[in-house]
Image (cartoon, rainbow, N blue to C red; front, side):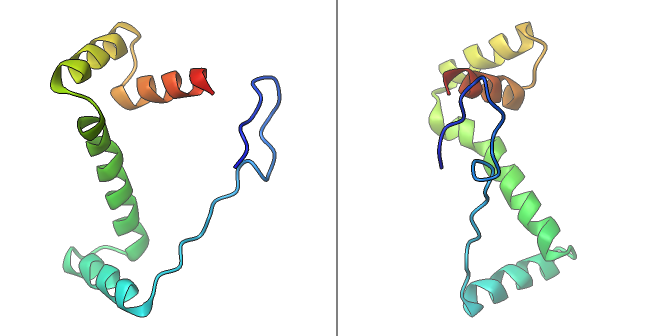
Length: 92
């Protein structure tokens, strides 16, 4: 995927989402896990993605770095996710 220039809106190509193909065994496992918690498969996928996003900073930063980033986020009245997204976008 191409980077968007800061002065232009993203094109449809920039916003393309790749579809991941799963084999029948993987689909069955995901479907069964969703059934086990009594939720639709799409909702289960959202839960998994949200959990991944929430846990990823802990994997990327040391505890001290994470505390400093959280402090900066609070100073800017942003959540940790919003602050990190803002910083990433500034670098693009």
